[in-house]
Image 1 (cartoon, helix red, strand yellow):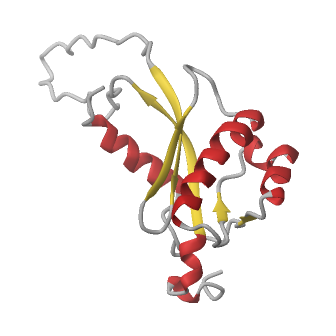
Image 2: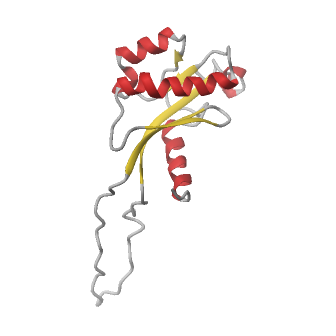
Image 3: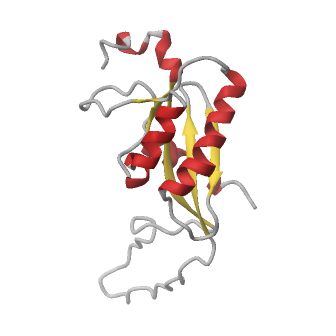
Amino acid sequence: MLEKYIQGTSKAVYNIYTGDESWIYAYEPETKQQSTVWVFQDEAKPTKVVRGRSTSKQMIACFFGINDHVATVALEQRRTVNSEWYTTICLPEVIGEIRKKQKNRRIILHHDNASSHTSTQTKAFLTERKIELMGHPPISVPLVASPSSCATEFQFVLRWYSY
């Protein structure tokens, strides 16, 4: 794959878009590392208050190109991704955003192998619109940011955004 895209210098990398879904919470759950506290041997361990589950969480799908963010599509409250949503709401919005900037360029989509991404309905939708799917290469230098790193970075940015 690196040879196909000339180590990422080929102009074809501008046609590659990647996306992933992630839960976004109304609060930032504390990690195990963050909740660690140093105490002396003779001290009692501090009481840790366990927060209840967040009543506000939202599944979002984020898509990125080589240079920037393309689209973020939110699902209804507490819903998960399925082929119907992916092909009727998510992908049309993403493709619409890409086409605003690149009317006739080819689109190469890179996403993980979730069932909604590999379903017959999704494959038919992409084929009908002449959108190519990029396979997963063996472990190598990424050509575009990986979906998981994009989602993690996006979650980090959202921590500082107030609703």
